[in-house]
Amino acid sequence: MFKCKITKKKIPQIIDFGKMPIANGFLKKKDFKREFFYNMGVSFSKDISLLQLNNHPKPEMMFNKDYPFFTSSSNFMKNHFKNYANWAKKKYVKKNETKIIEIGSNDGTFLQNFRSKNFLHLGFEPSKNVSLIARKNGINSIVKFFNRKNLIKFDKFVNKTDLIFGANVVCHIPDLVEFILTCDLALNENGKVIFEEPYLGSMYKKVSYDQIYDEHIFMFSITSIKKIFEIFDFQLIDVLPQNTHGGSMRYVLERKKSKLNRKVKKYLENEKKENINDVSGVIRFKKNCELSKEKLQYKLNDLKRRKKFICGYGATSKSTTILNYCNINSKTIDCIFDTTPNKIGKYSPGMHIPIVDYKNFNKKFYEYAFLFAWNHRKEIEKKEKTYLKSGGKWITHL
Ligand code: DWN
Ligand code: SAH
Image (cartoon, rainbow, N blue to C red; front, side, top):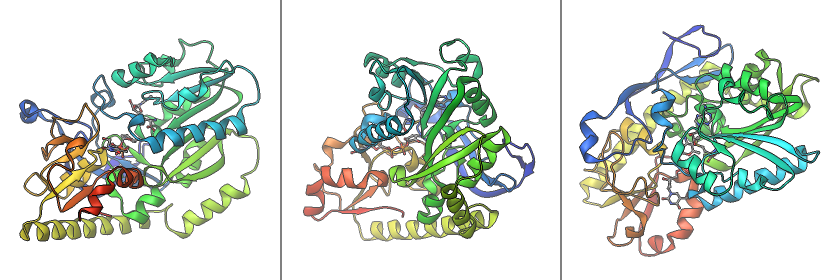
């Protein structure tokens, strides 16, 4: 049995994905022997409809001076963050010198849009290398986790913050109670918390189990966000589906004031109808994961029997789950092409597939390219137009 991270009630494990390395722990050959592994299992808390990881590495093991993910690695995402900022300005910015905080501000891609005199901004970004890139670009980014101990030093933001933003970060925070208490401490009376995270409903629909890895401790639904925040007297006032990262949901919360609004109610009813709010959804998902694994192994084995050359494209965090869960190594996938300098020349976590500069993608002909960055399909297919023309085929596990 495991404990729900919020209610502390005992809950059973439902899915066991087996032994996993750090998803973003791309490593050199000399470090293979001391690679860290944990057991990746998932449980579900019925009271608050929350899907959570049971074991995971400590946040400092994942978010440190060598974090290899950069928001700006996708032009589509850069554009998305510009739109996210414009939407927020139109809807929620009402005065000069609006005080905003971003959690998990990474290389500053989102905060870039708030550099004018109208805003006072602050980014909490514990991964030093990415935080320093933001600072170089004039962003007020601090190398700290977002918690009360770190917030209290910024008196301009304590009880005075208008808006707290996040994207793909709240699900990375194991102590959600501390997160909400820190929001409560930062916000002024009318302050709002706005964040977007991969959506449980999309993961179920696509069977994109690769959204589950050490950094993603929670997979949220609208029901779970509503229930968790209600415990602390926050109210969910809006939800907006996003097409980023394979299907995400944006949530807007403020301190409790009014009745549940119609739009949120409609979305909640839909989650009930589709079993996104209860344990039967997880059990169905578990079966679908097992089926997906069998299918993928069959397909790749068949291609190898027919002596086809296969490479990977996009050394995503998600790829670590697929490769380790399905036990796919460099005998099947020769290498993975990627744009990230911090990953190139290293090996994939656990399965040790070489990561190669994407500029070499067309040097040797691979009949099949496993698109691990399937969420960036449009952007990558456009960039690699000649691949399809020369007879190559993109494949995914989805
Ligand atoms: O939640 C998270 C999201 C926001 O980013 C983090 N926990 C970690 C990370 O997840 P991911 O690694 O699955 O993210 P992406 O954006 O799906 O991965 C992009 C990877 O693909 C990078 O290694 C860069 C690479 N890439 C590429 O080689 N060519 C990406 C694009 C767009 C390209 O054209
Ligand atoms: N928001 C960016 C980055 C997402 S990756 C985007 O959507 O592209 C998750 C980021 O959150 C990493 O940069 C990581 O260092 C940061 N992070 C993890 N835990 C955090 C915490 N407790 N407080 C603030 N940032 C955190």
